[in-house]
Length: 244
Image (cartoon, rainbow, N blue to C red; front, side, top):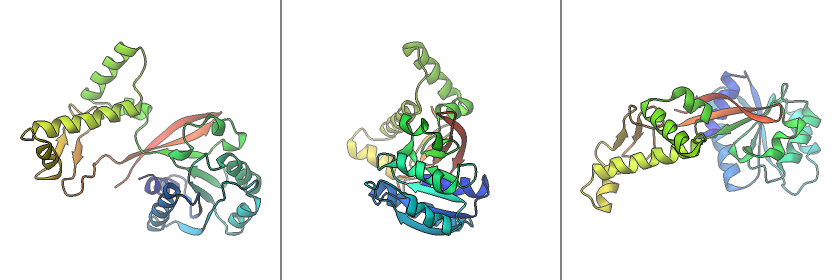
């Protein structure tokens, strides 16, 4: 989802035409890189190169000189911040300039890291998370969302995180499956992966729209990704991208 959303955002919202893909040579990063590259090409973006970065390296100057020579106007970091991400971001800016020129975008492996947002070189960097942020959920909320948010705030004197809302959404699917079953474990599974599958209607869904499980695949219809931007040392919600 994030690979597809990032490529769509770069092409249609930022006008990127040439991108270089870097991954951390791990399962998470390589999977993101493959999906991103395929989606980028489908969107009309030229992938001018790809490479893995060494998490133990002390400098990525030579790597970004290769990116520069390829003529990229964006760099996608498919991996995690723990794999020497701070040095990677610093060296990107040193070699290619700030992020208002050659764009820089990374997945949720870089999200929620104060060490990243504190870097001056991270200013203007884009990040993705594979769900709607709290801000976007608040904007889109339906009756079920409003009821839960109000009850949560009353009980805990704080706003519910998106993780909490998605956890409740998962519970709503399970409860709907139990209600449609014969009461056995096998029956609950069959309710989700057979017949018409499971739908939690928008008027009760805590996510503000229908939640549907495809009985053929088990996939959920809600494939929303939030794009954030690092601004003034903080992650700021920018927009949602729906993956189809």
